[in-house]
Image 1 (tube, rainbow, N blue to C red):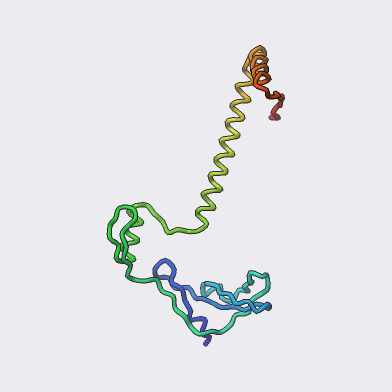
Image 2 (image 1 turned 30 degrees about the vertical axis):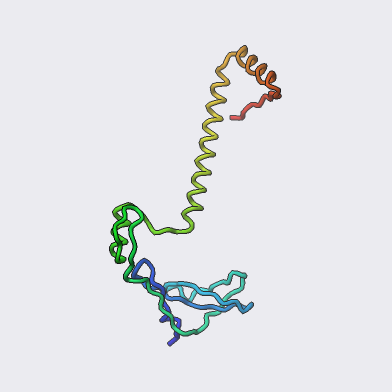
Length: 156
C-alpha cells in the first residue's frame, strides 16, 4: 500500500481529498490535490515536464474544528465552523476565491465597453438627426476652441 493514499486535505470543512507528491525530470517537487478517481492521471510540473508520483510520509491537513472571531458583518461571536457557515449563509456571503477579483475586474471592463458602445451609438443617432446648420455651428465652436474637427462616419 502506498503512503500517498493517506495524505489528505480537508476541503469545505469535511470532504477529504488526497495529496499526491510528484517529482519532474528537472527534480522539481510539487503536490496535487486529486480525487481518488484522478490520482492515476499524468501530472505536469510548472516547468512543463511530466511528473512521477513519489511515495512520502503521510500528512493530514484538517481545518480547525473550533474557530474564535467576531463576524466582520455584524460582530456576532463565531466559535465553530457551523456558526461560521450559518453566519455566511445569513449574510449571503461565500468563501473567498482569489479568482473572484479577476472575474470582477473582467465584468467591470465588459460593462464599461458595453456602456461606451451604447453612448457612441446614441451620439451617432442624435448627430444624424441634427440639422446641417447646427452641425456647422458645432464644428465652428470646436475650431474656436483651438481643436481640429474630424468627420468620422460610422459603419453599420
